[in-house]
Image (cartoon, rainbow, N blue to C red; front, side, top):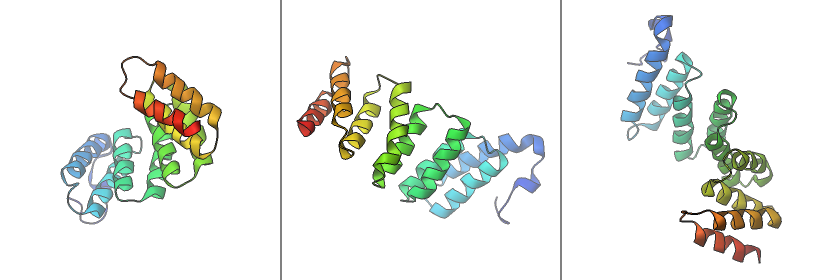
Length: 167
């Protein structure tokens, strides 16, 4: 399927988006194989359709699973150019920075994600853990209290632990 490093020149321009989807399916089927092949196929899908948000997200996720956090962050930034108000993408980039120990860089992304999806306990936990590292205890308390107030979540123990860490 991919012999010379590109398929774009062999596909009519009006079929690029469809070919991009086919390449994504191919990459998903081969994720347990050679990681470089999977990455190459996702990159080819994106060369055909740079605005293919699912392909960009999957590539970022796959790069992260391979420990390639800088490349993952780069793909998430590109995805955010397509969808700047996606709380999931914002949190993903915040998590990358958190994993790299770049807590100040993570903060604006985690804050925006929480502003966009106020009642998501996962986003609040991520922000609280990052803010704990920054010693922004007021924000940690606010998130723990909000998580505690949310009905129907399984995160009460997480909130209690956050409160203990601050107290």
